[in-house]
Image (cartoon, rainbow, N blue to C red):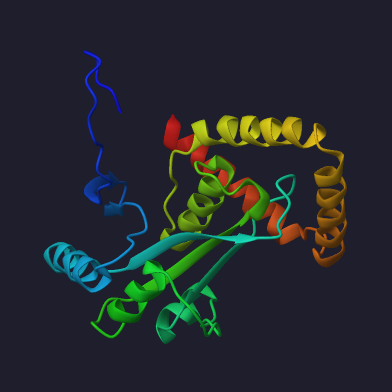
Length: 216
C-alpha cells in the first residue's frame, strides 16, 4: 500500500483480540485471516487469550464455499461436541471427516481443554467468493444471537447485504451462462427448502424486535 505521502509500505495481516460489553455478558472477539502455516503456534496463542478471559462459551465462526445462490438466504450450520450445549441449543455433532481449516483445528483443541465450544459455518456462493460478504456476515451474526440469547446491533449490515446482492445480480446479468447456472441453483434450493413455519416466522420477528430495542 501507499501512505498519504505516497511512500510504499507493507500491511501485514494480523489477528486481533478485543472486548465488547453487551447487556448481561461481555464478549472477547478474536478475528483474523486464515493462517497459511504455524497453526499450532497460533492455536496456542488463542488458547492463552482464552485462558486469561476464562470464557463460559466459545463460538467459532467461519465460512465455506458452496453451491448456494446469492439470491437466497445464506445457509448456516451450527454444531457442537458438548452434550449439554447440544441439548440446550438443539444442536448436533459434526459428522464431517476430511481436510480442515483453522476453525476445525481450534475446535478440536478447545472442547477437550474444558471450554464448551460451538462451531458455526456460513455457506457462501462459490462463484462470488471474494470477501467481504456482508450477507454471510449477517447470517453468522443472526445465528450468534440465537446461541448467545443476546441481541446484536447489526442494522447496518442489512443495507450492506442488500447492496451486495444487487451488485452481484448486476454482474450476473452481463453473463447469460452464469445467469442460467444460478437459476438452476435457485430451483434446486427452492425445491430442497421447506416453506417457513409459524414458529420460524415468529422467531424472525422476535429477532427483529430485539435488534430494534438494542438500537433504541
